[in-house]
Length: 139
Image (cartoon, rainbow, N blue to C red; front, side, top):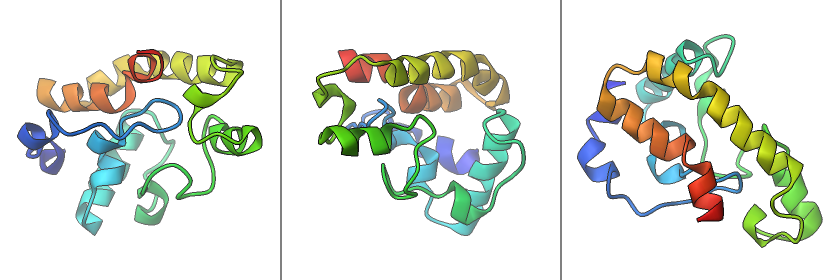
């Protein structure tokens, strides 16, 4: 995604915004997209990388952070609410099965992401966004 890699220099040193599952929203294209075109390109990439079965709508791909959609693929939004914590790291049950599943899911999808990327810089940004969960949560 050209618009995403065009931001490489500013994103590589962006202050982290860590989600409940350990993703870094500060470099996530769903979080960063500002135009309909950027959202659509992001949705196309999600499908190309195998993260969605089809190219979803801009409304479905856009994200403003944990809780903005009211759902979480890993069930962490409801879980953190039930445990009365803002992030999984604060939970007495951390590291739980849900976090382990999130880490395993990320590891399983990393190669497909790399294959879908147009450049090493693009993959580097995706790695920071989605594939440093363990470092972000446990580091």
